[in-house]
Image 1 (cartoon, rainbow, N blue to C red):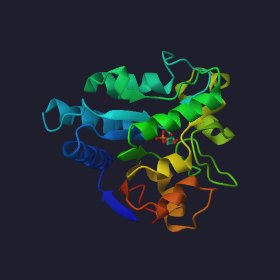
Image 2 (cartoon, rainbow, N blue to C red):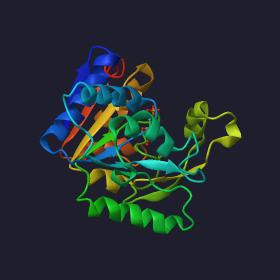
Image 3 (cartoon, rainbow, N blue to C red):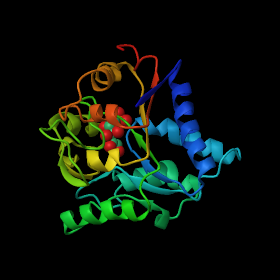
Image 4 (cartoon, rainbow, N blue to C red):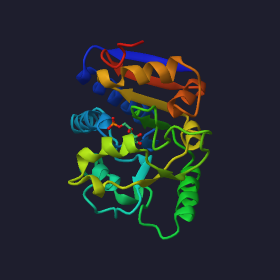
Length: 242
Ligand code: F6R
């Protein structure tokens, strides 16, 4: 079941997403939140920090699981997703490392790390609310166009398009990792609630195709049409092809 929220501006769009996350945590202070990296969540994380600083909500008791991490980057590498989360959210919210989980891209045994991460989510009681962005090819986490939906945390090979989109964060193109540990589509679909955020004209066509077109592993976000509780928050530009 898809619920749509279209906001007049990018700023209002981020505030609406932060409000959904805040409402979840007001109801259940130790909520398990699934979190994302990339451009989309940045303004949302700033709004969450502002809400906590204003005393509206206290996020400091949440537990978090990130969607993905590059393989081959240590957690203290400046471009690792762990570093991104520490800098843009965790430190400001006062979250300790025991509360936050990001897959270990330096694990020696990657399939054991995948299994352990999936199990850690289950042991935490599952994800209450999962925040997602969407890639230009319709990917959620690193579920690139494929023949079948992935079920659990897996080793993902990034497509050329995703590598080039991610290049903006690295000094040289050859520095962009080619593989990542990623939640599977099944891991995401098991979350109780989903919050998918998208803004900007460049996301308009994929938002239309993913949520009003056929459900297909070629556009992994399309599976969210079958999720019982998925809220899609857009600005007017991202909603402009609907
Ligand atoms: C990030 C992630 C990705 C991004 C997607 C959109 O953890 O899993 O699926 O959500 O690539 O990225 P941005 O927000 O940079 O457009």
